[in-house]
Length: 160
Image (cartoon, rainbow, N blue to C red; front, side, top):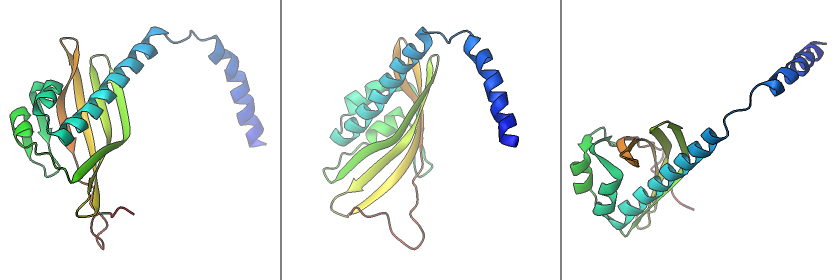
């Protein structure tokens, strides 16, 4: 009997919902374009790390960029770029990427899967990147990474 009451409530509310003004047709399209743009920057960022391309990575970061790395150390743009050392052994890939946009601010969250071929381990590094539209371009202004620790009884997850 209770489900009938709930169903009746939904059916009564449907006409009111359908008569509401439709959402703006331009906002979702613009937001989707911004979400895609920031997502592409995330992919470029990983590619720059893999190649060791400091110049391109520098172009993605605001001059006052700050990062809190997986160890808890705070780095500015210069320190992040100086610490870039590509490795032919390691591969990186972003999973679970989600980009949310509010006007000229975007927050990107995801997981960077880092794999060492020679050592046979893979670690997950969840991250949050904050972007701002500055002079018409999306630039990273802040980041934070967290090393996802493997279960206590094992070492980092091994690739099959």
